[in-house]
Length: 333
Image (cartoon, rainbow, N blue to C red):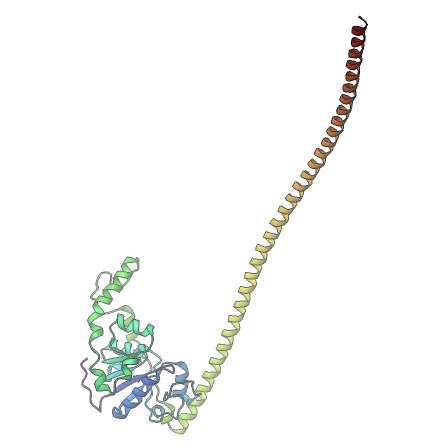
C-alpha cells in the first residue's frame, strides 16, 4: 500500500533482546511522535511478561522492555500473537511497521503494509537483499535522525519488484528436483488448499497486556500463567532428561561399537602374533637344523683336511726318498 504517514498513523514496532542499542533508541524516539503504536515481541518469555507480568527477561540493550514497568507495557501497547492468521489480520489494519525483527516485517510485506527493517548481521542482510525488503543497516540508521529522513533512504516498493522473479526461481527449483506442487499446471492460481483450510478456522487475537486489566482479571492471568510456567518447566525438565538419556544411550552404543572394533583388532593382532610366533619357531628349528648340518660338514671338512695333510706328507716323503735313492744310484755309477 501507499504510505500516507501522519502523527495519528498506527505503527507496529518490533525488536528483540539482542537488538542494537541504536535500533532501540530510534524506536523509543519514534513513539514520542507517533503515539498510536504497538510493540510486537516474539520471544516466548515475552509472552509471559505481557500476559502475567513476569518473570522479567534478560537483555543488555539499553531501553529494551525487560519488565512490566517499561513504557510499552505501562501504556498497554504490546501485542503477542500465537497464530499467523491473527498476526496477518492485525498488520493489515495498521499503517506502517518498523524494527529489527525480520519476520516482524516480512508479515507486513506479505499483506502489503509498508515497512522498514533494521539489519544488523550478515544473515538478515543477505535475506533482506535477496528479497529486496525495504531495509537499512545499523550504521546507516545511526546517521539518520528521524523517520521522515529514513523514508528518503529506502524504496518501500522494492520487495514487490523482485517477487515475480523470486517466485519463478522457487518454482524452477521444485521442478528441477522433481517435487510436486500446486502451481505445476497453473502458476497464476490465486488460492491454495492450505490457505482455504486455515481461513475456515477462527484464531484468537492477541490478549491485552496484564498492566491494563482489572484486579480480578490480573489474578486470573497470574493463576493461568503460573500453571503454564510449571507445565513449561516440567516439559523442559523432561526434555533435558530425555536428551541426556539419549546421549548416554548413544554414548553406550558408540562405546560398545568401539569396544567391538578394538576387540576385533586385538583378536586380529593376537592371530598375527601367533602366526609370527609359529614362523619364528619354524625359522628357529630350521636355523638349528642348518647349524647342525654346518657343524657336521665342518667336522667332515676338518677330517678330510687332516687326511689330506697326512697323505700329502707321506707322498712328499716317498718322493723325497725316491729322489734320494735315485741320486745315490747316480753317484755310484
